[in-house]
Length: 140
Image (tube, rainbow, N blue to C red; front, side):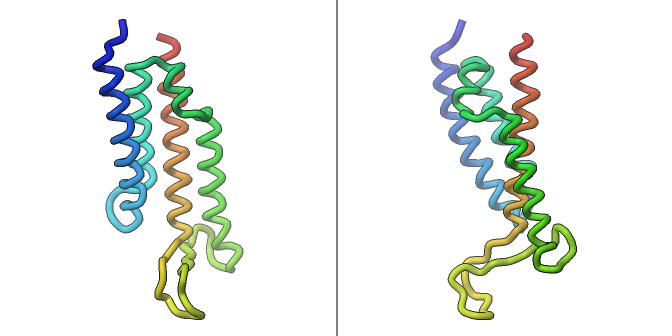
């Protein structure tokens, strides 16, 4: 039996947990947090939704296969590592781009390859955990 209170509460929690996971992803750049913790928090949100509404509904809400999400995340992380090689540095050395900066000026919006790496870790953790959770949930 599905409880309407549980379903509505799960939908609200998923939205809040996804927003908080993005906050942790972006905050972890210089402070505790990052892609791993953000991915776990997002996976918890979809796990709660799968328990409340069923795995089929959770897969529809996710819109992509978890394995595909993990593969895209792995590609983002590898691209972040390869960016340093292109500029002649050691692999996975942070590369910075300052948006809106004048020539040689470091004033502007800093974007780094570290953020791309964290995004990749976020997607790998989200995809891997949801693959396991959905497989366990479907076998019950």
